[in-house]
Image (cartoon, rainbow, N blue to C red; front, side, top):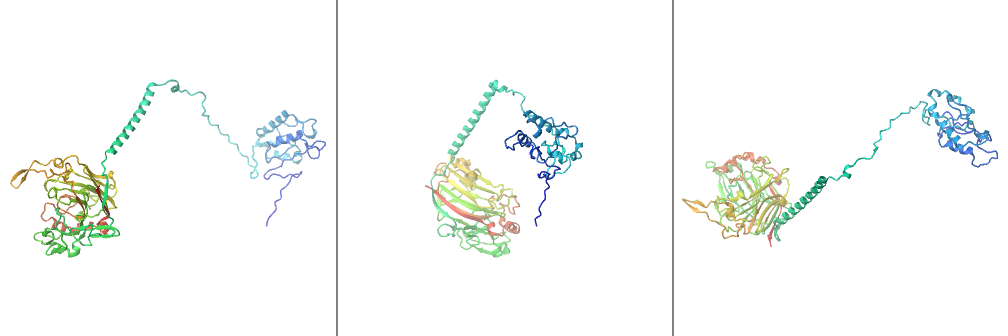
Length: 550
């Protein structure tokens, strides 16, 4: 239900503004219009001018009062004749004087005059057009009768300049300052120009492989053992004294989900640990070694002979693809686990310059599966090298190797690209990008001179002059001037020094005749570090590409 609101009106029908004591009304002498002329004309009179004049400054809610009354201590306003009682309209100066008088009410009326004094201004005094004084009380439609105190704020000090600012640098030119200014810019320009020139010639001097022709690509949608890969099967350790046997079993090398897995396993899972240690004869199936002693063994606790305690795989492209100069690129994830030895490397198709290492070896990538706390570079390191030398005990590998490390992760955490670029002028091996090169060598010196080999060696009971096996090869390049094929494998342990003695709790000594036996006895310790998940224990290869220089 709606309820109508009654608004009281003053005697002349004007509404009072809410929250005020009185409303303004103007009472004239003729017909209720103090500004009307005797003829009732609507012409613009001086009274209308006065009304407009005061309406500009008059507040919305005021109390009118008579010109015949005045507040105590306030000068009366009757010195200015107004309305129909005046014989002549007020002048402009009079109007301004009136306005100044009204404005002075703001400071002339004391607090003691309200509210009792206001009650004297009754309805009969509202006939005057004169606006009320401005009291120090702010009256609003929603206000109260309390007096509002006006706060005086000190004006902030001006920050404008009071006079001209001296600028001596404009009037006087400092010669030394100008010279230093231009010298600075000239030196900076020369530095930038010199850096740009150096970068340009440095970029020009970076050796490039040149034109390449793809000769092999395997994305491992299948395991092509007929046209691409060959498994090498034996137990002889491949000249490194390795402790694994390499098999043709699908447990150790297989393709799954478009990736090749080379996974080490425990021999004890097949024949039992007791048989590994004593009294068991093991002949490997499908042995590919020409040496029969590398195809079988009988364990004997008395002699310290054991069956290889681990099984793994080694695959090559020897019978299918090889390159002489070019590029090889392998995308792989490395295994983790103590004493695992993953490798991506190349050997010559023919021993042109003699048995290893005379004909050379290119190690694209080698690593160790030991953890990051292994002081001899664990799974967070990868290494590349060249093996070369006139005799097996004179290997120049110590002069031609390098490595790269991941400081925030390991190479077992994800896939990386391992590559070799090989030309008649240089060889470079890197991981992921050329900026991360593990090893780079320019062929600018004969390898025999590079090796600084002795002039004579002891051969049996007599000394003979050291022969240069590469004298008939390509100068500065031999023995790396012939076709090489690719090998991928995961070895376990070894006695060639890849795992240094006395480091990381190594359970065998390289020089010991029972090194493999000692390693087998510690199986419970090192096998516990091998992940159960084959994806973490295996070297997983995503793709292999080989290019020939053309």
